[in-house]
Length: 286
Figure 1 (cartoon, rainbow, N blue to C red):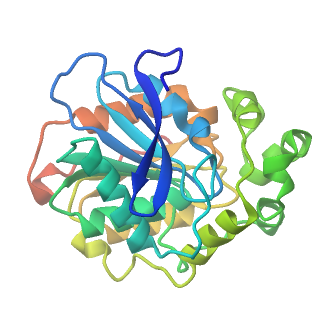
Figure 2: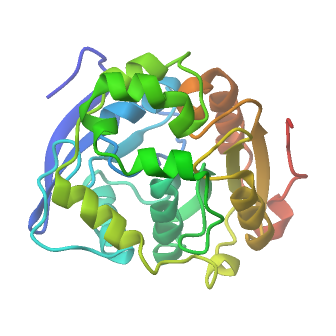
C-alpha cells in the first residue's frame, strides 16, 4: 500500500512466523546516504513516528510496528530484546540495506542499543532519544509513571489530552495533537510482552563495546526519563555527545521537531570518521 506521500510505502512483511507492519520512506534522490532504522517507544504504532521520515527526505527510513502493537499481530510467546533485534535485522536484509544508522526513542532506545551491539559491523551511527540503560535507569516522577501504565492513554484521546503534560512533561502544542489522533491501542498481550522484554535488561555491561559515533538527545522537562539517564549514557559510551532540548519533555521529537530534526540531520551527515577521532565536544543547549 502506498500512501498519499509518494515516498512512503506501508507493507506487511513476514519474518519467520511473525508478520511486521512496516513503513519504508524512500529517499527523494539517491545520494548514497545510509538508511535509518527506527525503533519506536513502548506501545507506539508507527504512525506516531512518520514525521521522522517526512523530515529526513535525503535518506531511506525504515520502521515497523513491534509484534502486538499497531497492526502487527501479537506473537504467541514473549520475546527478548536480542530476538527482536534479530527480527529487525532480517527485515533490514529484506530491504537490501547493508550499512545503516539506527535510532530509537524511549523503549526503542533500548532496542537501538541492542541492535547496535548485535550488528556492530553494520551500524555506523546511533541516535538515542529520551532513553535509558534499561533496568539500571534513574526512574521518573511517579505521577507520570502511574499514568504511563494506564491503558486509557492509548484508548481514550480525551484522557491523553487532559494528562499529556503530566505524563510526558510536554505541552499540548506542535505535533502533540496529531500524535494523540494517531494513537492505536496495542493488544494487552503485546504491551505486556514489551514490558517483559525490558525486565532484567541493562546495557551497562556492554556500552563500552559500542564505539560508533552516538548522539544522545534528552529533554530537560522529561518526567518519564530524567536527564540523569542521558548523562549516564553519555559517560558510558566511548564516542558519544549529548544534546539537550530546551523545554523538551519525553515526546520532544514530536513537540520540538523543528529543534531536534536539524540536530539529527547534522549528526547523520557528518563525514565518516574512525572511532574516537570522530568525537566532537558535547553539544548542549541548556
